[in-house]
Amino acid sequence: MIKKILLYILFFNGSFCFSQITFYKLNLTIGYKTTLTRLDSCITANYFKDSSLYYKGLVLFKNNQSIEAKKVCATLINTFPDFLDAHYLKGLIFLFEKSYNSAVDEFTLVINKNRKHLISLFNRSSAYGLIENYNKAIEDLNVCVSLKPLYSQAYYWRAYWNEYLGNYKAAIKDYETTINIDTKNYEAYISLAHIYKNQKNNAKACDVINNSIKSGSQISQDLKDNFCK
Image 1 (cartoon, rainbow, N blue to C red):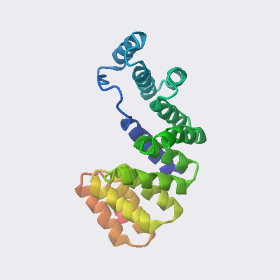
Image 2 (image 1 turned 120 degrees about the vertical axis):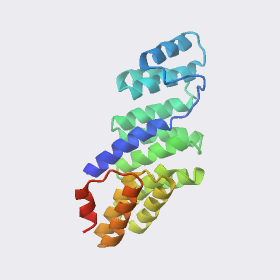
Image 3 (image 1 turned 180 degrees about the vertical axis):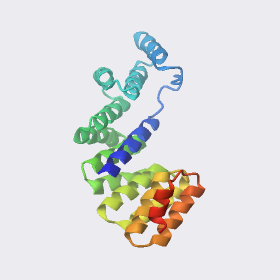
Image 4 (image 1 turned 90 degrees about the vertical axis):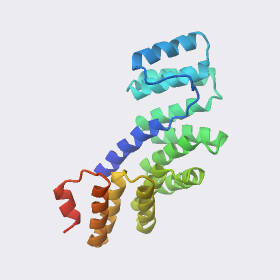
């Protein structure tokens, strides 16, 4: 369970980074308050109001202002009901609040209108996994890797949910693919080493840990000894 919670945090932090860019002129690196001030000016002037509202909600959400983000999201949906990213944002908020079934519903609404909405598929897979519907989570990740063959996080999470199902052969393959795409995904190394160790294949487990260290992972000696003894 601890591993599941930690990986959920990793997933959640990563999910924000894949937010769809709809308002390309906005620079989100200028500071939280300045960004909100500029977005409010755009909203007042009706300048790309849908995207301005979306990014205001996203910025609030990123800065742990989920209540305010929900208010902005509600305004966005009421004003622009066909703006798909509004429902994506609402799904992210539900995911953060651990309202996983509601998150699934919002992401599904987006996916039904755009079957290739990659970030909604990815986030819905997480929501499915967190309500222990692992097969559905894997189905969404299958679509993700078909749309984006080098999507390392999709391979990683597919491996993770397959591991929960006891499909270790599939999990090993996807952890290895994750590492081949992203040599810095240290969680993939550790997860892969755990599978080999549980299979009593200590030599392979140790090889994986040594490869992780070669890639720059700061693994303690105690942890290394756990796999290499």
